[in-house]
Image 1 (cartoon, one colour):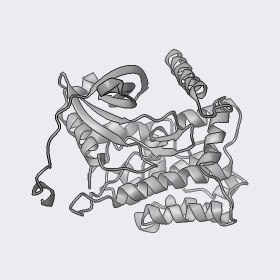
Image 2 (cartoon, rainbow, N blue to C red):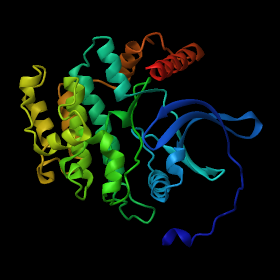
Image 3 (cartoon, rainbow, N blue to C red):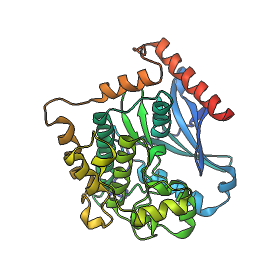
Length: 342
């Protein structure tokens, strides 16, 4: 390997220290906290820290997946992907230090839309999905420092793993089962069963998956954003799987009058059962989505989405400044308390 031959200029040995501030999110395998990375001379950086759940920490496969995820995405540096900063270990527990996103995931976003009886404008649904496609296109094409393709596939593109920052940036997170050129085994199938309603047919059928699997999931996300519901979601994971494998893909124009023929075509091309009939890469999907919203000359931007999201979460006055910042934090804390009560 070429990169081992270069001698480092010099070495810096330094201890990272983190203070954990609050719990942000609990996932199936890990818990995400907000923390402060402390440096020299009173330097403080806000970060997100993902720690493996204690009951999984003893399972070798989980640890390997967790470490594999961190190593695999270490160099994914892109505006539409949550960045990984550091893989650490403390008292035998592995953790990943990541970029802290001030915002909400799409589950929280759509729940708030429903609570407020609001409908997401069609252009914003397409815009959000286009940013997801942009992040995926970058990850799919990523190669290592010797130019070899990493073959990254996300395999869990779902509402839980797409975030909208209050500034309007869309970020794909948690490449948890995105093992390079990976293969979904039954045991892992158990892990991802909860998100069965976003799986591609080949994934639901435990076949080998490639990047076109993520295209299908992006199509499910787009349809869900437009319709306000996931058409594949069944009463349980088994039924969701069955629907993904067998259900006829509807004419979306009949489901929602806002959906015209070009958008219906994009949805059907994403949701083709046969991978060969889908977009062959995320760049093509990105092009069609952007053409759809921008071909008239003007369409939504990060700013449009940011303004919409801040208003939706009662932060219309979230201009720059500490007041806005503390307001956001308060809102997230209140949201977390509500969730804890629920």
